[in-house]
Image (cartoon, rainbow, N blue to C red):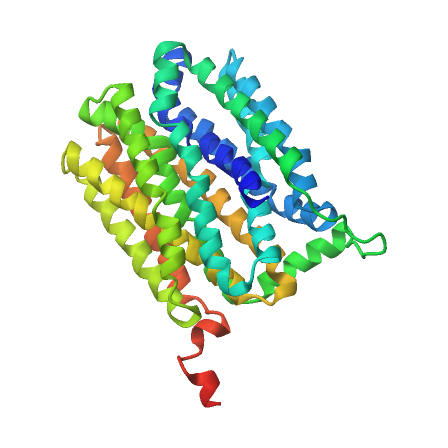
Amino acid sequence: MLMALTTGFALSQAFRTVAALMAPPLQQAFGLTPRELGIFAGVFHFAFGALQLVMGLLIDWVGPRRTVLIAFPLAIAGAVVTAMADSFTVLVIGQALTGIGCAPAFLVCTVFIARQFPAAHFAQVSGATLGIGSVGLLLTGTPLAWIIEAASWRAGFLALAACAALAWLAIWLLVREAPPPADAPRPSVGQALRGYGELFRLPFTWGIVGLGLFTYASFLALRGLWLGPLLVDRHGFSLVASGHVALAVSVVGMVGPPLFGRLDPGDTRRRGWIVWSALSVVAMYAAMAFNPGAWLDVALSLVMSVVAGFIVLQYADVRAAYPPQMTGRAMAVFTMSMFLGVALMQWTTGLIASAAAALRVDVYAAVLGSIALMLALGVALFRWLPAPAHARRPPGAQSAS
């Protein structure tokens, strides 16, 4: 059942990274500016992130299976609308529909894992799920580039819509869960919102959310938007060649989440690993900003895709930080912060790219440098704002007491 749910997550991965290869043909077809390209890429993530609290509430009311079966048809419809678009406005509407439809895709997996697997295995199983779900990234590498080259960018969106329909069918056929008891209490919308408010009254939530805004966003800004334009414009790669690189980044990136899930050092040391992993990504973006050459850009992108797997440690940190009755809400808030951060970063980097072009500054140096600065800000918030109790407790303190 988890594998079936993961097919929906895999397609959401494909949809959120489609702009990396769609950017050049869409710029040609619609004359998109860098700012408009950033909006196109970011609106999916804004819609995805903004709906996390609603999806968390739906999961509590009707369960993971029903939630994803209700929402995911919008992703299929959004891909079709995008494929048929005749203007930038319709492109944005299609992306927004797709983002809403994909909104529960990973959240249902994390809630399913939290409910069905022992707590000690959460990081390992979540890491495996993230790794398997990254198969969706493979679709937006060489296969999508071939479809675009052989047919058109519209055919690429239609192919993704067909794959999404198959994922919905797999979930409908294979996932089964017991319905909630008829007398089970269901919180009102007001009670649910007050429950979310409890999270933000806990001081350590702000550090978790602060870093969450920028970690996944830093990876998706490259893989999901700027990798294709970077390789085509800065280094003269063809679309198919840049698709090969995107495919390689996706394949290598599948190793990261399971690896970090297995290497999880435990509650008291996990946050240190998160900080140093994030800082290493900052350093790689800073190096790429100075245009070290085509193959170093490619090599750093590959290494970064592995290190980005430390995001699974952030999910484990969230699970450890809150009591069981708050886990679902905490996961929803953290996931919301991640994808609103992706929307924010992609929109912001689009603005920065436009400003850099107007000022005759190296566009990709400005974009990559700004990503490094935003991620460094997130690390500072995570490191210096209050930490949860499990991170403050020194090793052996519990046994000593």
